[in-house]
Length: 58
Image (cartoon, rainbow, N blue to C red; front, side, top):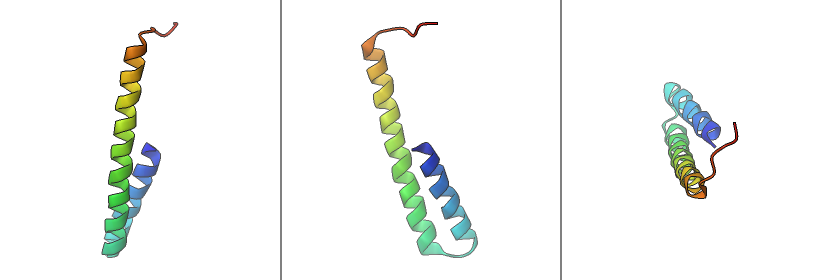
């Protein structure tokens, strides 16, 4: 998911450099949404792992 956010961010930067404001705005909006979804899933995963209470086997 983070990979998709970075991809859309790069698309937004390239589109902005070439003057495509609408495409750059849309791509940056998509990148923001994907990034925040990634953060929420990361936090949920960390909380679930902490509540499970098992330590990883080394």
